[in-house]
Image (cartoon, rainbow over all chains, first blue to last red; front, side):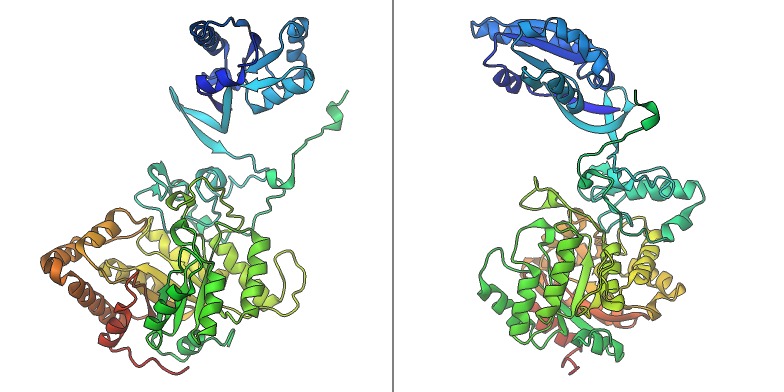
Length: 222
Length: 307
């Protein structure tokens, strides 16, 4: 899923400074699962914003809503009913959701209440870690199911580099060396010979470097 | 001859090579380079010019290498994958060759987190292994990575690094084999303090016959103080300093620490000369260039051969 983190309240207050009425819009997708932008967080953030405004002696009217998703047109439709009564929307969805909402309601400034961070997993309750960088050209079959692009700090294809020590990365003793993980996993699988192969120069054209990406399936189009 | 550099001539004639290192200044002051170059002249066969090492902004390795050539010295230009993509790197390799540079050391590069611009975006379009392949392809196939023919191929003597002290240990020799397969003509190792471990590494190198395919230069760095030894042990990524070295440095006391550092270094070189498959040393006297002459002389490596 997509992992995000709430922005500091002072940054959000600065963003909504011109407005006395806003919609605070959550999303029931990824940001609910990572406890950043679901119904609960919409409630907590709205209370905090009202309180902060009260201490400034200013009114803030908030319409709280949590949409099924913000990355699909049909789930954004319910907003149409009342959005014109509010001059701005504060969204707790990921960057994709925030932008899609802004595209659909072009007269309204849509402000980000979260920072979208990465594609990751819930490693344990309250801990999320990165797994994928969406490079568009998966090599997990060759690397024991562990991604060198996302898990190596240098995205090396022929690691581990000289900075790998006791299983940790040179950037931080708390960060696992991605290539040590690959090594250990291939050893477990009895596939260490895969590490003897020089992995060739990668085409990054399927990654962000190729420009904004698009996928079309003609058979699904209406 | 692949490139005809001094370093290549010495190594291919079977003589024991000595390379030095010069860290470019954190600015445009050429006198810093002149001062360091003077101390290295006559003591080494080729001088590694670091490429923004530890991700601290310094004068570019290509410019310093060109300045060394003007001074009549031979550079070994280091190139890291952290700051440039394949377009910029290949372009700089053309430029480097045109300026007279004949040795190149292909590295991944320290992560920018260590340097003075930790908020920078890194590149790593290629990794060190892929950079080696690229330089080899440019030299031997006269083609850039994209496939276009080259007008005037850069005939470089190609180097790579090896760190026998990083983990996992048993993978280190495999990685070296991959570098050789990718095109490395010579290897310079990380600073060695743990001789036992290095000798075990070399044993594995010989078992694979790699010592006959590539010239290995063993890295040494003289210690200035017990503090430096501890720093190397604890703070420098992929470095191993055994306790016996720290004890020796401590035992020498503050007054004689530098002398003891030199003694250890010279003893190490003597021992390294005996290791089968070691074809030279890479002497990195970090901010202590005036130690180079003493070390090389005491190790019996002077005068340097005329290539």
